[in-house]
Amino acid sequence: MIGETGTQIFKALHEDGRMLVYGSLTGEPIRIGEDPRYVLAGRRILEVFWLGYWLLRLNDSERKQLGQDIIELMREGILKTSPGRKYSLEEIHDAVTQAEQTGRKGKVYLVP
Image 1: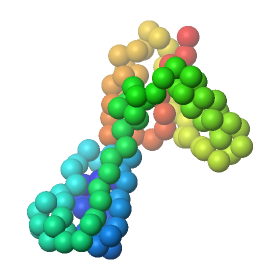
Image 2 (image 1 turned 60 degrees about the vertical axis):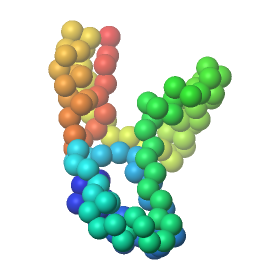
Image 3 (image 1 turned 180 degrees about the vertical axis):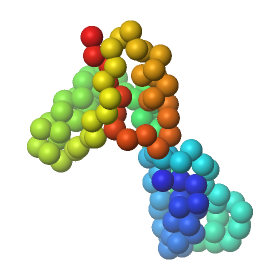
């Protein structure tokens, strides 16, 4: 989400509402400042979660624990991911190009 959908969701927030953005499918911005009433009135909060930024702040044992927690959630069926195309290491350029596409379906896998 993001773009027009994200803009409309932010506008629909209660005056004490909170919106957490953790991804962008469209690559378009949220326009929260086009009408200052939505920013200035109330205490609406817009937060962004970016894994790359967050991971850099974890120490080695915390990153290891996070990996173990994710694996356990996947085994339990709580966390699911959509499979995508598998790329050989010789296809690394194509894999990176695909991974950077907005709105793609599934994860990009590198296999030896």
